[in-house]
Length: 293
Image 1: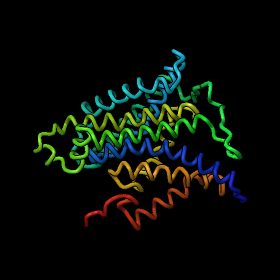
Image 2: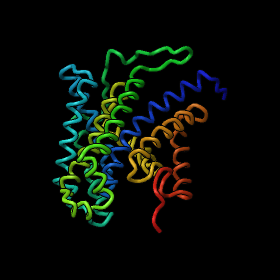
Image 3: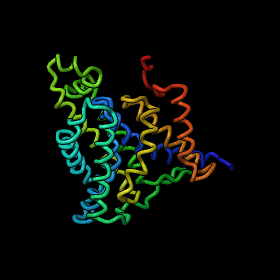
């Protein structure tokens, strides 16, 4: 299939825009795993729940999704914080299969509760800029996706600075590196766990808000993103949130080029093959530290 420069640039931009959403979701999941060493299988369902919050704020009050972002972010942070305090902390330190069953059960509860409350019909948020395109020569850039990309980059930078420069961010990184040493240094580890889980879930609020400007919402939204999210966090290196961000951009681009040049049915096949190769050749991830033997 012919791939001239305008088409290449269009595909590259769309891939980066899509990858930025993957990066946001993956950064939240990586932050939780890096701090608490627990894989949250309900992460995608928190993404879906965030999307419904955005939809109902728009449908009931006419508030633009981007203006609703602070409220949705705060709501999901509180939900994540409370979830850790009530449920997740009870399985910390327990065998891995117990942790998996807990988060899988939570996933089913969230998904089926949404279906019971609001049915399974797709929901759409209609904004005034939904169909707006920016013409840059031969390249047509969808404005909602461009805006999502810029905001995703800004949020990722803000999260990075928070973890790098603030007291709580340092405590989160220290707890992730060595929980016992952090406790001996006077860090309230239980509080840091709750903060980390709440912040990780808040990343889904940002991703869902940006997605809602151009993507349909349904109770199965989270499931459609979780496969690629797990691929991203493994490629980025478990616990490496910067690696997850870069891997998300790379996989989003690969997925879009695969869909165009091969088939949309194969858009996740190539990322899965890359995932398998990385597990075989570099199991610590592309940006992860070498695993201890």
